[in-house]
Image (cartoon, rainbow, N blue to C red; front, side):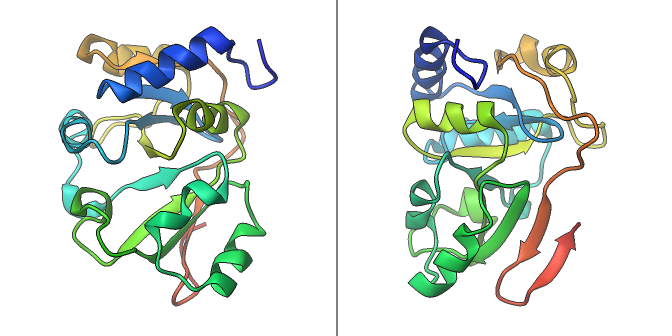
Length: 188
């Protein structure tokens, strides 16, 4: 078992599951996240349907390192470096999306939400997968987010979602969201 709470076997199995279009529920800083391969359109659509989330809202991408998120934004290098100084952290930034980023990630807008989480298990999942994953709270519309593997299992295991073990910081709040172009804090 590594310091991130996952064995090498678990990491390989998680990567295989994501590669095959599977969905996962996994611990992040404050709540369990629901995720999948961001470039697998059918997987993203299944995630949105399970969550009962409006696709126009867009989704957050998380990665183990800022380099994994760089292809998704058209920010100039100076702005990108300023954002990266604050990661890893429970801080999501909304930035201009790069050309060609799928609408299912941006909600049809020209911006995308990105984060390098402070949670070691969430970063380890991305590293094992070899790139970013979708991150949205593990709950159905109108329900509170899951704050434990047990609650995530109750909500999604019957739907074939693989539940990744781990703990969240029960004192933490969901990540801060900042709209980078305007500096406006959307969620603190």
